[in-house]
Length: 259
Image (cartoon, rainbow, N blue to C red; front, side, top):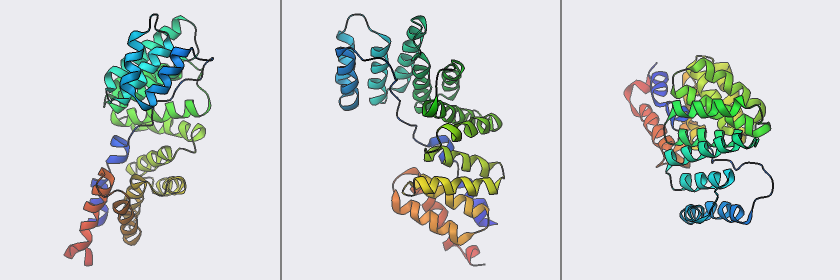
């Protein structure tokens, strides 16, 4: 029982602390020169992009979006989230379908800043618009699931994760979070199936290997747990996932592990 108990205690990171996907630029009509320059700078020099927006007269929703990207690029997540929300509100007034994507970006930034309740509100607005499709819709469901887990609503999170797996099934994070939630809920068959999908898509992700070890431990397979945790340590020894895996591996050095 020691192996299973220790694994459960070590397994909180993937749902609560996994790095969020990068904010997604909106699909829209051809940008103006200022918008194009800003978007290019936001990727390479977010401080310069912020200054560019400050110099432009008549800030458009897309320039507000670019400012949000620049702020997030500086890890000023709350400011970025509020700026994306302002872009969404301006786009709604202009009857611009990109508003939903700006709301999704706002939710993503709130998540990065640890504000789950605000993230849920922004993502509710993004999905309620009904204009997100394909991968963008799937990623919005995935982000809302992450917010719901942080808020303690596992049932609603499962609904969003199942939606994300339909539209964003190539995203290993969706499978990782689904596997983690299934393990926490005691559905080990689902957990094993979903972590196998995450491993197929991202075998070099330490968080995926950590969770594979946690699921194996909960299933009573000590050798598979050891192998997965060792992989997590090898891949990212100084990252939270690698450190958690290293802590989990220490139980194999105890007298109880030999019994």
